Amino acid sequence: MTNSLSSPENILELWGWSSAWEQKRNDEHAQTGVALAPARILAEQRDYMEVITSQGAARAEIKGRLRKHSKVQPAVGDWVLLDASGLIQAVLPRTTCLKRKAAGEGTQIQILAANVDWVFVTTSLNADFNPRKIERFLVAARDSGAKVALIFTKSDLGALNAADAESLLEERLGEIEIVTTSVQNGDGLSDLRRLIGPSETAVFLGSSGVGKSSLVNALLNSDIQLIGEARIDDDKGRHTTTGRHSFLIPNGGVIIDTPGIRELQLADESVRVEDEFSDIEDLALQCKFTNCRHENEKGCAVRTALEDQTISHDRFKSYKKLKEELASHASRRQKGRS
Ligand code: GDP
Ligand code: ZN
Image (cartoon, rainbow, N blue to C red; front, side, top):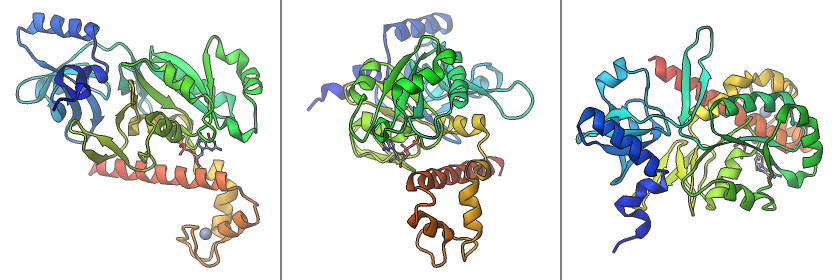
């Protein structure tokens, strides 16, 4: 039984392989004289890369010499060439590159994702709408060399209409495609899907809580849970549990949603929970238990405020989510040090 969608020739095409990449591979072969197999990096693990090859999902390690001496270090989204033992021997020249300067002084650049066709700068049409933040995301997005669109989310809330939002941004935007969406009522989802060509790769950039995971879910058109943990189909159609990752959109296209991209949101905004959510943090000090999780503990001041609507459920959700992301960010950094 053959499934045309997973035959070896077009597994890679589903993930964006094209004649242009074939050409780059041939150029590399002409230089090295060795025939190597193409693969795309889907996720970066601590000791290896998860890749997709014409044979399906696999693990690949980086050749020692490449790791030590090459200026180009493989990143998520890269097309690489593997030798027979599955070592990454070469990185094909990138078309685009989403990067950030590493925190602190110096000029170290960290590659968040390579070969991205679309960067979707995402912002919700509600009270958190912030032109300055949007502008900063737009700078990173445009710097990548990818096409950039601005995605408005939560249009169903009716808090801010798209035209008003546009006029608030007008001077900062220049020419830009804007798609107004809602996962509640489906507004704009088919436009968004149409924007991503069949073999194109997209990423969503934007503050925590604006609705990026919800949009990714909607695009994948399934019940895959992206909040916290994600499940992807491996080549054999099995489900694999994994962290944030790269995904195939049914009917074509790739979404990259890796921790690096998530953390750009935190790093670049230098979000301090205490600042953004000082009202909730203050309330939390009044909870009976110091380690209160504000779920159903006795004497929880935050629950009380939710019940009498001093704080909104939406804001509380964003607060919890941000706390969780910061906690997992911190624990990953700890692991990295040990
Ligand atoms: P992310 O942090 O950017 O990935 O945001 P999420 O996708 O996790 O969404 C944050 C919150 O906004 C969740 O409570 C969602 O249910 C809610 N949300 C997302 N999209 C919409 C939308 O289109 N309309 C409304 N009303 N709420 C939304
Ligand atoms: Zn509490």
